[in-house]
Image 1 (cartoon, helix red, strand yellow):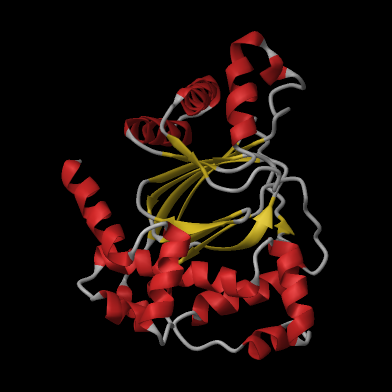
Image 2 (cartoon, one colour):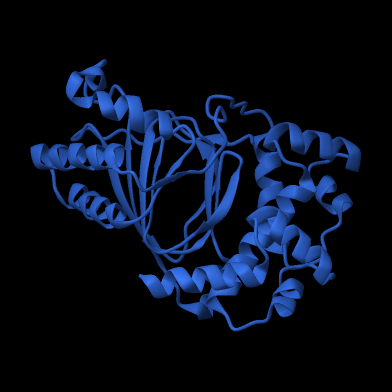
Length: 294
């Protein structure tokens, strides 16, 4: 994908950039930056793109991302409706590998961080299980502290990230550092349109027209940038929203099928199983079973 290079503001009083974002929604276009990123979503939900990964994010999600991996976070459309009264609360830490001193993370005490965490982060690391809460609490401690205490909490955070065994790698290997900033606006324009209109019938000609290409040229262009066909990308967005509806609403599978833009239940079922590895009914039972065990 062709994201924008995000310039992280330098922080004169600290070696790391720490911020807390609160507001009606989080709506970042596809972007990348040379800094590593830690993000804790205390309160928010929507869809997340990470390299060639597409998935949902929810309250409590915690991630580590190494430099130059394209990513985007976009809230569900509910957040853009004034009558919903929704808001977000997100903690973010940015730092460069040489933020403290060139070669600092090559010290023996930090070998497990550079050898394990930084390499995993090239695919995007989603933390799961009990360690998620421990690390999230440390991230908030980093935000609310300063000086030496902030650095100590930061090192503890990285140490837990590197040592946890409960994590998921999201993007395919080798996606980071393959960035070309040409035509960034084109890809973001297409993604924004699809995320806003996935519930409706979308004609390929309409999407191609957004970026001034004919259908065949657009399909070649889109796959060369995203490693996915246009139809695959749209199906993944729709299926991720279907997953959310399955566990949050009382809608039937058939109702969800039409709600997310499909007009054929058989096609929906095929795409759902192809993308998730299970049927919609199995997905819901599996989710409810895991929730009951917690």
